[in-house]
Amino acid sequence: RTSIFSTRATDLDWEQNARVTYSVMEGHILEVPVTSYISINSETGVIYALQPFDYELFKELQFQVKAEDGGSPPLSSNVTVTLFIVDQNDNVPEILYPSLPTDGSTGVELAPRSSEPGYLVTKVVAVDADSGQNAWLSYLLLGATDSGLFTVGLHTGEIRTARSVLDKDTLRQNLVILVKDNGHPSLSSTVTVTVMLADTISEMISGMSNLSAPEDTESNLTLYLVIAVAAVSCLFFIFIIVLLALKLHKWKDSRMFESSDVNFHAVPTSQFLGIDGVRAFLQTYSKEVSLTTDSRKSDYKFPSRRYSAAVTNTHTSEQQNFFLLSDDLLGNKDQISVQVSFKPFSCFSSFNL
Image 1 (cartoon, rainbow, N blue to C red):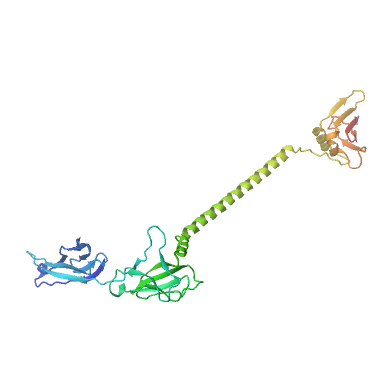
Image 2 (image 1 turned 180 degrees about the vertical axis):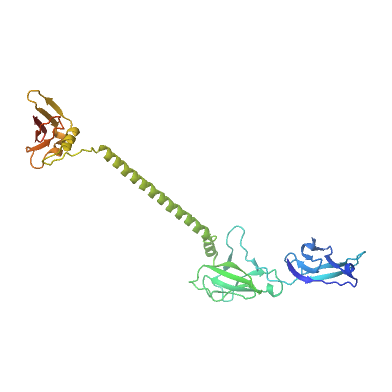
C-alpha cells in the first residue's frame, strides 16, 4: 500500500477525552465499497491507497473521514476528502482500421497504376484510451516494398501516393505503419497495409490469388530443429549398433581361434638332453613299447607324421642324436646309452643295456 494523504484532528479536552481515533465512513465507488480502494491509520490519520487508480474508470475519489475522541459519551466530527486522479500514459494506441480479418486472410487495398501523385489510397484509424496529450497520436511509415512510392500523414494517418506508379514497381506493396502516442514514455502499435497496384480486374484477381497468410517462421524453425535433433540421434544409435556388432564379431572369431588351436609342446632339439627333457618327451607323445627278455632291448615307436617337425633336427632327417639318461629313468645303476634315429615319417629308439 502507498501513503497518499494525511488528516489531523485536535481536541481541547484532557487525557482520555482528548484521544482522537480516525476511520473511513461507509460509501461506494462504482458500486464497490470505498474501503476496497483506501484505508486510514486509526492513530495517525494517514490515508493509504490499496490498489492503483484508473483515470479511465473514475477521475476523482470522494469519501468521508470521521474523527472521534475517547470521552464518554464520545464526540466526533466528519470531513469530506476528495482525491483527484491524474492521467498516466498506461494505454497503447488501438488500431481500428485496417483490422485483420477474422478468417486469417490479409486485408488488401487497391490503387490503380494510373493514379497521380497525392492519390488517397486508404487511411489508418487509431484511438488512445488516455486523455490529454497522452492521447495525441502520430503516424509514421516504417517500411515499404518500394520506398518513395507512398507517404503517410503525420497526424491524419492518410496513405497517399508520393509519385506516379512505374512499370518496375511491384504489383504487391506492403506498408508498415507505426502509430504512437504523445505520452512519456510514448507507447506505440504497428499495422501492415497491403496495397495492390492494378488497372484491370484480371490483374487484381491475379495478384490477390498470390496472397497468402504470413507463415509462422518461428514454428517452422522449431520443426526444423526437432527434425535435425532426431536425425542426429538416429545416426548416433546406428553408429553404436554397428560398433557393437563389430566388437561381437571380433570376439566370436577370437573364441573360435582359441578353441581350434592345439597347444603342442615342442621337444628340445639340442644335441644332449637331460633327464627332464627325455621324461617330458616320453610323456607328451603316444608310444608303442615292445620288450624282450633276452636281448634286454626296448624298441619305442613314435607316430612321427604329426610330430616329426617338432623333434627333427634342422641338419638332416637321417642324422643320429645321442641322449644320456641316468639310471633314475629305468631303475638301473648302469649308465644307459640311447641312440635315437629320426626319419621324416617314423622315429625309432633302441635301448642297449
